[in-house]
Image (cartoon, rainbow, N blue to C red; front, side, top):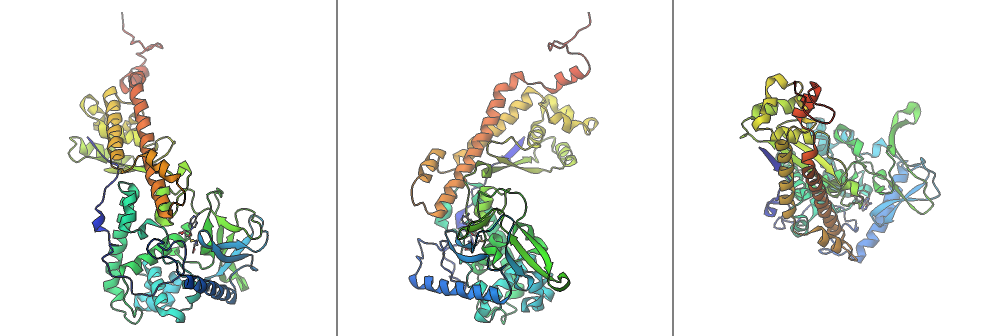
Length: 489
Ligand SMILES: C[S@@+](CC[C@H](N)C(=O)[O-])C[C@H]1O[C@@H](n2cnc3c(N)ncnc32)[C@H](O)[C@@H]1O
């Protein structure tokens, strides 16, 4: 029988970011922004002044390195923290920021740095770990760092769930987002443990103060929220200036808003070039679309915001062939032959049909009794085709029941109802993190209700469906047009 995982309630006390941890000792950027945990650390008036001068330093730094593009976009304070504001009317497609490679924090910058020298060019490290270490070591250098004006304007936090306190995480109790957040932090912790042992503790000169897990998590969070999606993996790079551009849900164009091109003599100097995807009036903020494919949970985890668009509400259904299933081996063979495995993940989106392979996989999991003959080797090449349509009333009823039970039990694990969430979300002056929590948990529940609705409707239609045996008889010409079985007189 199938095992259905809806989500995992993870013990909060295991979060690596427990308040018992000592505060970070590395001096991280102090840019005040709305991302500061307002409840715990209200913005100090003095630091606002520091930001103004930090912004001026940053603009000067950009100008002195030939970054910009004729001053069309100006880094400025905006509701999302910092952003890019149009200095004049800009038509769609206009280049608004050009950033030469010498300013990027990427694998080549790591290789050329002391970090690169300390670890053989940095090539043995995961790309994000290498750039994270570069970021932290440059922060440690303070004013001596060539990137100092950029580092000074980076936020101390975003509203990504990786930065939430345990109390804030309680607001997403029972959600898949909590489970993912805990998993990501555990992953970052394990990477931190190894670089701490192998690089940080053995290169005290590069990291004169101690680097804590919170520092490393900050670096991870900066990369996660600022790297342009296509620049992941080996190409991972922080692009100062261009990375100030914020996201707007109103921009729905598919194409990329940026490119890397050669400039200068023989096009030798690489330049990151950002374009505005829409017309922007002078004084308005320039926005792009970060990623049309990300769910609200992914937006919350990566960037610390969500959208009210229902197509961002999604729930990942995890299905698994149970090892105790008497047909485990055959079912696994069939799943593998069709590109799936013992465990399969299906992202269901609100108000959209189920992913195409979900029903066949579910039917496979629930095969038993008189349908088991389909698992025989004789059917191996054709079985998936049969699974795409209902097999038998018993099998179809089992998948409906399994999914409806799973949805019911998942819905029972949330600590609020959709109605309560909707009431809360209508309140004024909602804290950004609470608004994210409400958006994600309401979205997950709506998707679970949507899945339940699909299987409820199917349950009601069970009698009217056509099953394998009828299809087979039809193929053999043994069923008349009105559905009667043809007998010989
Ligand atoms: C690439 S950075 C953009 C620059 C950033 N605003 C800053 O102050 O440095 C991405 C971060 O900007 C913020 N952001 C971008 N678009 C946003 C939006 N539509 N709503 C809320 N925050 C947004 C989030 O904190 C996100 O993690």
